[in-house]
Image 1 (cartoon, rainbow, N blue to C red):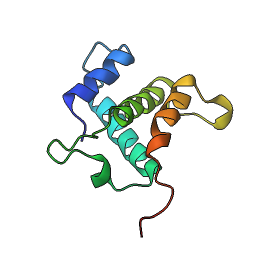
Image 2: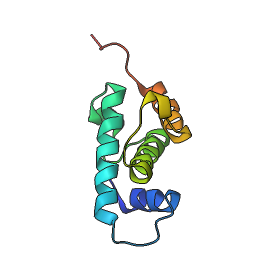
Image 3: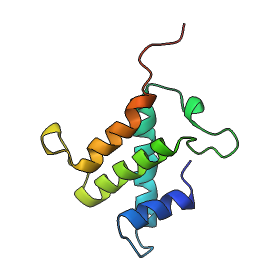
Image 4: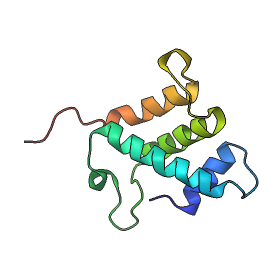
Length: 104
């Protein structure tokens, strides 16, 4: 779940000081969150706080912000040959949460 706090973090990091693109930024955050969760190979319920519905790990919330910021600033065009430091940072934040094997 994307909150006003998440939106503020993205706007601050991308230096957006107006509200005209808030819905677009929320869409980027929602899509980035879904992408990060999918990347971990975990169910959303494993990563979300039951009470708030937000991701319960600061690292994953920051990774969502970094990915959304990258898409906002660069139009989402990235490949392994032109990965920005933000994408390497996002990858570094997510790797510890990646589930490698299914629980039996």
